[in-house]
Length: 244
Length: 206
Image (cartoon, rainbow over all chains, first blue to last red):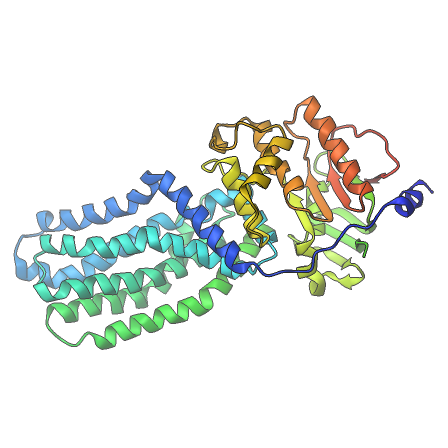
């Protein structure tokens, strides 16, 4: 009785129709993640320092012979970049999961795939892109031929974007696990192999003065594919993790 | 248009144990529905199911008469959920936290509105302090500021009184009643004794 009485006397509250504002949400998510990462500089610098250390130690550990170095440099750069990217992936969704903002992200009236893509973009901007920009400098230490620096940077920039996208799927799947790091590596490493092969192939071709267009085109195609499919996979993986 | 969230024959199993079975719920405008039950009786799980986060349950959910699957977008546009964890980023200031939440719902919002919402929950003067330096109760208040900032008809609140001081509890209770009386609807779990009110209804679990 009391309940129905309360209902009769209450005014009606306006309901919201689902509205747009996707761009506002994406922009705010980009800004938020960038601000957060730039306030935790140590975490941003970690993969970059790792990358620089590995590349610097190799000539010291193996041999300073330019010919030998030129032949191992492409693989070396790419393996180091791949591991550096992997190192930073585990924390991509972790802190959001821990403090409850991930469930808020899932309940936002916006497509989760787009918001996930914004988070991945920030990851690439702060790991993949700096790695690519740093690589030519480190290339001098491995005495790479002059013409190969641009290709090195370009292939890394393209490739690490794919690595971030693919890795984010693994990070989303393992975010609910207490120690997901090893599982994350096992999940995404097989998917990283094509990027590694064609990325290293591009740099090798540039060093030996062969055609690079095919390698770069395939890297671009891999990125396009990852851009199309990964956001949906990330969204689905996040929902699975939250359900678990 | 008044809102209406219905559950029919809702059942959820966790670790070979039924948390609840055959649960029928009708939640409508002008109500505060309090889910009660001992620890581990599935209150949080029920709230997560009713707010559309969990999908491994049996039974049907309806939003304004439509099956939840089809009405999900409309449902989310009218839902404000505050979970166990306040969802406040330690590295961002309260203002930045609120700005992101406003943007998530698709509105740019304005700085004065956010400042006013923070002042309303007693955080005036803490706008630019990193949330990590605030106390647990103050962090919870940052999350609660969203209640005033983003007008939503359906509030789903999981233990909103945690870590809040006595005056804060009284103010929040008054806010819940006011929301229900103005045609909104509140779904809440709490171990705190809520004052009897004609708009308050209880549902016992476990």
